[in-house]
Image 1: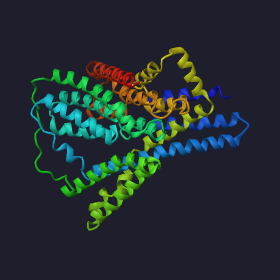
Image 2 (image 1 turned 135 degrees about the vertical axis):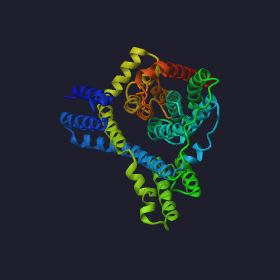
Image 3 (image 1 turned 180 degrees about the horizontal axis):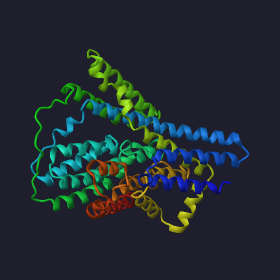
Image 4 (image 1 turned 180 degrees about the vertical axis):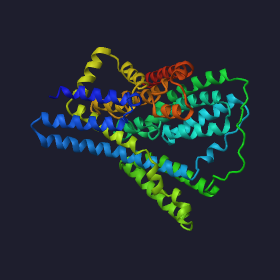
Amino acid sequence: MLTALPVVFAIAYAAIALEHPLKINKAASALLGAGLLWTIYALSVDDPHTVSEQLGESVMSTAQIIFFLMGAMTIVELVDAHNGFDVITTRIRTASLPALMWLVGLVTFFLSATLDNLTTTIVMISLMRKLLDKHEDRLFFAGIVVIAANAGGAWSPIGDVTTTMLWIGGQVTSLSIIKGVFLPSAVSLLLPLAITTYRLRGRPVVAPPRAGGNHGQQTTAFERKLMFALGLGVLVAVPAFKALTHLPPFMGILFGLGILWLVGDLVHRRKEDICKQHLTLVHALSRIDMSSLVFFIGILLSVATLEHTRILSALALSLDQAVGRQDLIVMIIGMVSAIVDNVPLVAAAMGMYSLAEYPPDHFLWKFLAYCAGTGGSILIIGSAAGVAAMGLEKIHFFWYVRKLSGLALLGYLAGAGVYLAQHAQIQ
């Protein structure tokens, strides 16, 4: 009966990958897959106590990731509700299109290391609508924003959900992932950025007509700066909190969330309820993407069954025998993440290779963080950031393939080469 597990997982995985044509939310497919996999596993063995213990362990490790993501997403929503990101976006001004692209690319790269790459993409594309009138120009900028957001998220423990999974799982530590993956990630952006800006050389920025007044601004400059500084401060402080206390990262993010909640209530305490309702943390909690969190729960619990039944370790052994080289296996995983979601790919890899054999900060884990994070940029559907950009700017799949996929692939391979050269030099 256990032989049915890989088949059920493959069907659930296919449904997740084909979410848009099937018009079935990937969270539903992930939850259905998790329920079926654990049911089959429980009915296939004669030791319900062991299965319950294994499920409890899986729920504990999954909950740590979910609590962390929930806290981080709420903080970002709270900063956005206060128009906090205007602190950065209002300072981006230039008359040259190539110069603007460099500014946008670099701001996105570093911003996505602190926020998640999806939020950063939405913030930066919203900014492009205020700065650029021509849709063709915005398409190129949106493509670079996707590449920059994915590259920026890969080297930070809080920048991309897959890197966060590796960090919380104990596969990587904060300083090691930053030192090991920063330069390859930067190269994976700088190469496409340089080529794209060369194509746009000599072209001026055509700004859209200015709308009169700023009546939509409902927060003061002090409130915007305060919530922006506090929000980013909490996110950046979480790795330090983990290193200092040795507590799980979710405890640090929830502690920071409590601080923001308290400060927000104090700042807005004199306002009428109707005026401050959309600025409260309660409202921010209602705006987080619960569908994505439910998807993560389903996919992580699904992968856990394959791990407990040793199917993943058998897969790792067969891959090692077939391919032979660890670096090539990880690069293949990165390429595949351009087609399917990188969360289950990384979750599967974490189950395939044990920490006993591959200790924290091993070559495998850091290279996996780079490849899974940046490989999604090769196709517009390969990452949450790409899907968001696709919807916001109506980017056609084949337009991205023609104009940017080759550049993203070039950057991905160049960054991988830099990582391998860097690793060889250290050894």
